[in-house]
Length: 461
View 1 (tube, rainbow, N blue to C red):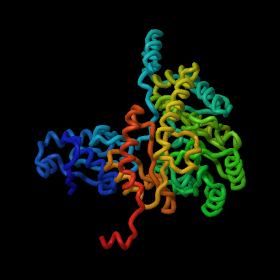
View 2 (cartoon, rainbow, N blue to C red; view 1 turned 180 degrees about the vertical axis):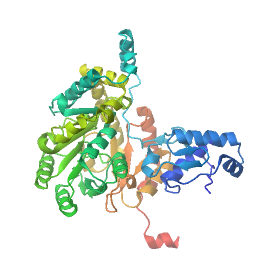
View 3 (cartoon, rainbow, N blue to C red; view 1 turned 120 degrees about the vertical axis):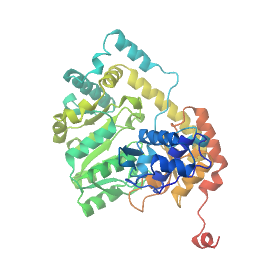
View 4 (tube, one colour; view 1 turned 90 degrees about the horizontal axis):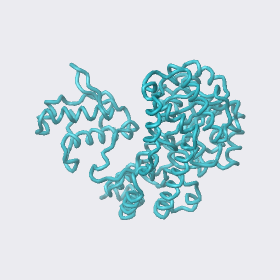
């Protein structure tokens, strides 16, 4: 029977219980389907009121950590550390500064959404945007998405694009159209949590491509394709998550050649591409590429406006499945996205985001990007800190110093993947908060950067 240790946690008891639950899920001490104590049992164990436990379980359900079934009890819903990462965080918990959540910087002075909603209201369009998406709105969304992709250097016809509710849904629909359960999919050896979640959902086997400073290594793609018979590679050529790597033009040519040689289909995740001047790799492989992207990392995360694009036949198959794709878009947010893409608003917001990332990247550079090879990289919203040894213990050391980073074990495919930590420098609400986080990391650097003790000494101590 699970009993949380609330010592040293949030003084608000129900939040302390939720934090303990999230930690237990993230650390693997609570597995998917585990039945939790009843409200009365846990209240008795902790010496608290039943109402406090009820409030804690309700909050845990809101954070998608548990599910409650009348007559059966409360069960752990999150089945992996990836799910725990996406749990809503209490930024004031133990005054820990969050550098783990990969979200864009927020312009506290920006009022674009306020102005757009006022405009829609004055035109009498808000009521209509609360209905189901119309065929006309879906068509507008395709035209708006085409303008975004053209700006990215990938000119496509609107009919070559399927819009949907964000990049995660775009990735899911693309893989559904191309894959069967148990298929092997090539991905970078350090891949984003959303990819791991989709693979688990669809029953796909991920094969980790070796990486260097420019991302996926072509020779490794070639070797894995030959060994596994994989037909699909999911790659992030621009600002790869978690490493921030950007493929050079020469590397892109080499990767494209291997993909053609091994008859591999490329699914390119370009969600961060708008933060660079580098066009999608898919431009060199139009006959065998699908691009999935959104506005979430560049314009505004709350728009949930994504797209699946390309000239492959699979796109037309998806275009006929509007109930599973475009109909999932919020009509109101779709209207906002179309207006921002049709005007200069989207690109203006991207320009602000890029400038803010540049400032924060330079702040983080002296401490987090000490190696010359990293310092020459494109400014990225997420910074990769290569370290040897156990990444989880390094992340725990950072947490003890009041900063939350993500260990490489969350991203790793296989045991041979590189180790390190990811710091999301755009997560703090202000540069001042980022500066405080960097000061804390500097103060604790000897602990979280320290090489692990040799096994003999560790045992002896």
